[in-house]
Image: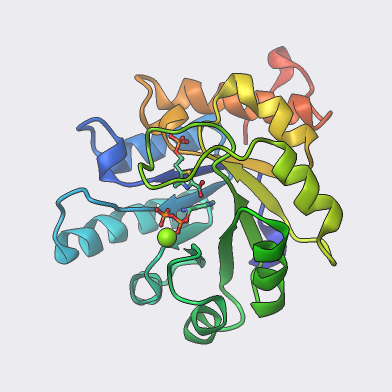
Length: 227
Ligand SMILES: Cc1ncc(COP(=O)(O)OP(=O)(O)O)c(N)n1
Ligand SMILES: Cc1nc(C(=O)O)sc1CCOP(=O)(O)O
Ligand SMILES: [Mg+2]
């Protein structure tokens, strides 16, 4: 599984991000639009843990049907229960080594990093990819720090002692994609730029095109096949 991961367009989402719509429907549309990876991030939504498990099961089974890797945010117990493809932890979550011990060697482990030092430690302790942010200002995560800009990606990319996939996150929309990819990211992770839009499929198509174009691989909108 790990080798097959495509980081181009990573949707991070929970029910709190979907403007009252069914998250399963929003995810289905986003998959139609070309997302390549999904993270279930249920935060301050008011769902009970039981409801979270139940929503997670529905999202997980859609990802399985559509062949999209399914990552769980923060909780190793939920990741294991849902037989997720991976777990994402931040600097205040389960320590990376312990998270790795819990999920085993085969599931993907994503780690948030803002600095080269955090990235280097994540690498040492078993991370498979880095989420670097907040790149731009974001209203989605009130406890995110000040924007660190695409330059932080370039610095981590250049100084990390061995290469790891990097996704930029935080305030990224179509207009911000090119800078993030050109700074050296393998992809962009977004919440509101897809889940908050009236047409999540169209939003995903436009983001995916922007990523491919910036990476120099776009066949152009007319011939673009998001899957
Ligand atoms: C891909 C990706 N990158 C970063 C984060 C942020 O994780 P964290 O700092 O633990 O914050 P929360 O998401 O838990 O609020 C992420 N979730 N995904
Ligand atoms: C979940 C998350 N993590 C961040 C980080 O900086 O680590 S910023 C963020 C929220 C991203 O939402 P949006 O795409 O709507 O700005
Ligand atoms: Mg976290």
